[in-house]
Amino acid sequence: MIVRNIKLVFVANATILFCGLVTSLLSAWALGPAGRGDLLVVTLWPPVCALLVTFGLDQAHRYWVAKDPLCISILFSNAILFAAIAGPVTLLLSELIIPHLVGERSPETMRLVRIYLVNIPAALVQFLMIGLLEGARRFGWAGAARLMFFVVQAVVYFLLWIYGRFTVETAALTLIIAQFAAMTLSLFAVLRELKPRWEPSWRKWKEALGYGVRDYPGVVADFTTLRLDQLLLGGMASSAAIGLYFIAVRLSEITAIMAGSVADALMPEVAASQADRAERLLGRSLRLTLYTHLLVLVPLWILAPLILRYVYGESFLAATATLRILLLASVVLSAGGVMISGLRGFGHPGISTIARLASAVVTVISLLLLLPRLGIVGAAVASLLSAYAAP
Image (cartoon, rainbow, N blue to C red; front, side, top):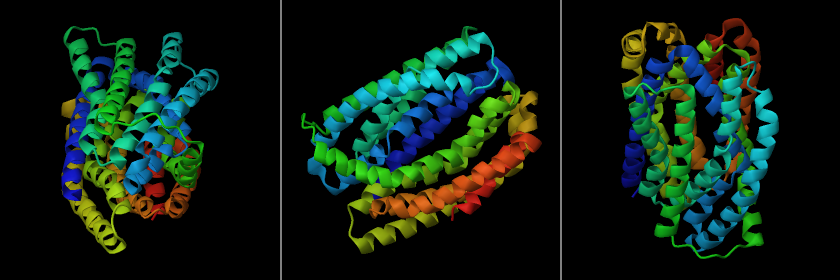
């Protein structure tokens, strides 16, 4: 079963990666480093806010649905009620706070920052629904719900580029449409596949939240490790530097595709398995992750300057050193992600939190020291140091 699920997740992740590379190319060609940086500033915060306000409930859904499939209706009902309250509240708070975190930007960029915050409630619903689908091991539908966002983005970006209408504004509006399409598909998938009834339960919500809260510090630590560099760049760096860093991050994600697929499929399988089988699954998954990374890492490292020059353009060549450092960091981070997924499946999210918090502390300290001195290279070095701190 886990091999089939890994294949399903891998196909979805590979397609998402392909769409992401296409959209990064189109946005780089149409906007250049500075425009690409402005677009990242506009779109960076809403998914982060949605993830942080889940309080680990998406991971709790994965665990409890795999452990006890009879609780699906209760978890679904609680998720809808939670999103109906937390989504609008988070949107209002973000409207007050986020414009002060993006640095000095043009009036048009600031207007788009505020408009794009509407994605927060939609992203929150999508995260919670995907947790239910993956807990029930409906990885095909979960992958489709994730993929919808990127497919809509890629198709509309291509049309905008063909007709010469590709701007920061049209790109941001495209991503709003894509987010609501992904949310709608995730809701449809849950209703179709899991057929939940309306059975809200305060007791079960507290139980799910208990699991989520134990995992939540690790979620925040993961966010700090993986995204704090971009958030700080968004407030401190020029739009051109942000654009260069984003392209380096996007290319470095190629090496993490198998690890992400394994980690997504592993957690519910471990939760539903006996201890001996679960341990064997974790060991095989970790070996598979490391082997595939080595196969992909070497050619990308060698070809990095050629890819940046001839695919993205001469103006993106300055991201070569950053890309190579991020490639190394992704290997260690991906192996750690598989281990964390296994610990969640064993019902011990708190244990993995210790390693992730250590990584987050290293991230914060190294970013504050290196980013002002070395710019985007310093941000990449901070990512590498934090990756080695986690194990």
